[in-house]
Amino acid sequence: MPDTKRNRYQVYKWITGVLFAILMLLFGLAWFLNVKSRPILTDRIKTLLYKSTDSLYTISFSNVSTNILTGNATLENVRIRPDTTRFKQLIGLKRAPNNLYTVSLKKLSVKHFHPLTLYQEQKLQLDEIIFDKPEVSMQNQQFAFNEGRAPRPVKSPYAFISKNLKEFSIKNILFRDASFKYVNKNRTDSQPFLIDDLNITLTDLLVDSTSAEDESRFYLLKDIVINLNNYVYTTPNKMYNIKLDQLDFRATTGKLRVNSFALEPLYDEMQFSKIHPGKERFDIRMNDLQLNGIDLPLYISKQEIWAKEMAIAHGQVSVFNGNDGLPSASERAKESKVGRFPHQLLQLVEVPILVQKIQLKDININYGVFNGESQQKGRISFENTSGIIKNATNLDKIKAINPIMDVNLRSYLFGQGKLDVNFRFDLKAKDGAFLYNGVLHGFNARILNQITKPLGLVRINRGTVDQLKFSFKANDAGAHGKVAFSYYDLSVALMKNDPTKDHLITRGFLSFLANALIIKSENPGPSGKLVTVDVDYLRPNYSSFFNMIWRSLFVGIKYSVGITEEKQNEIKKHIANFKAMQEGHRLRKLKRLERRKKTEQR
Image (cartoon, rainbow, N blue to C red; front, side, top):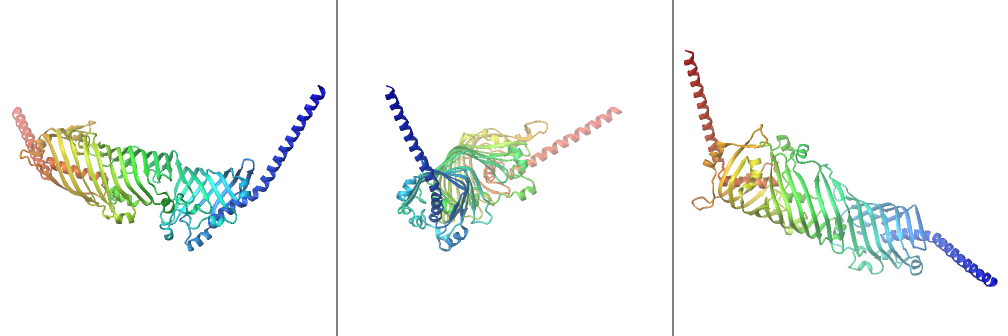
């Protein structure tokens, strides 16, 4: 038994020694290969980037560490820079790209680079490259020789690496929490665009003898995925925050989705108007935005946004004017809104854009105004707005084919009266010309008090609207059109502001005169003929798009119910006569009192 135990111990000891020797040999070999592979890997990385980009880019890094067992490597203090001299040469050769990039980061990680495959088959295959918090700068300059080119390299990178490699591939390239800066070199007045916390995944990069001609790839890639979480950007004028919650884009489908978007004012309504007099305050909140059919190669090469369809569901747009469209003379001079209609603003957008169709669903639109005379806010709302916008673009080549942007909407005035409205915007018109027409269907006229009382100092006591039909031509100068307002059983009261009270009060006698002498209680009248009204609204240069639309309609409504200039002048005469009668009555009463007093003194 002792001999057996001794022999067993010797066997264990021998096995342990052999295993230890093997492990030491493996670790020694791994160390040797790691040391030997670093200069080889360093040289291959630098040579590969330089040659595959037509000698345009160089890469530098302070240190490279490798692990031959796991096939991982790390590069520190990485800089990828363009050679500007070579770029100028490529311009002369008509091979220069439209975009020039600079990338810098502290650490770049390479996962599973398969060294044996590299040594034995001359194929550099990487599973993953991770750019951790890189700073990426992109300059865009359009070149005519790149116009209409397919999203593939001008010359296949394989021609530059074929002497050293048969294949170069990366399954995934990850940009995590990237800081991105875009500079538009096509305009001298362009401001750089900055964005942080951007995540980009480039999928299946392949450089071999056939990949450059593979039509299922763009720029040698199979797919590009972009993600942005909780993005907040303060506008340069310090008036708004732009907020995006969860933006996702995939190139293979051309679909971009945003969970929510907001244009959030930094001040409340009245404070905003005090800080920015003459400017309208916008508060926009949208949920579930989708763009389909985005042409990513076109955006990468020319920064043009082309999309087949955009869908927006469940949101609200609130516009507030704190000056009732009547700012001071100095503010009017500074805050001219000529050239600021929606289609004119679209033409001022720096980014070339075409969205063939925009589909809206359940959008609530509110327009509010503060009236200095009544010291109250009036609001008009269009709820559950849905419809389609076609041909939203600022591209000259598209406008040359079709210069009209059509907008067809269905909405509900104050959530009750159904409104069908159509706009036709002339995208090429220098005077901002557009058409608008529509039909507002039956509702109780009293719901209009939300805007007629604070803005027109008129309260509707009762009335029923059958239909409001309108058709206008408009431009920067104003609007001209027709209004057909069909209603019955209309009664109103005129209001005024009483400084001693916190609400408007009724002007009793004037209300009686208005109903008796001015207001038509129904249209069609007893004759059965519907009276239509011609409207010529001269737009003040400080009047906004929303302001002009509602004021031109309001003029038509006033004239339809009888509140014309002639009638207003007529009632002014009655008021003057009434005041003269009151004054005469007061003077006669004073004289009687004086005579009575003299009689009593005798």
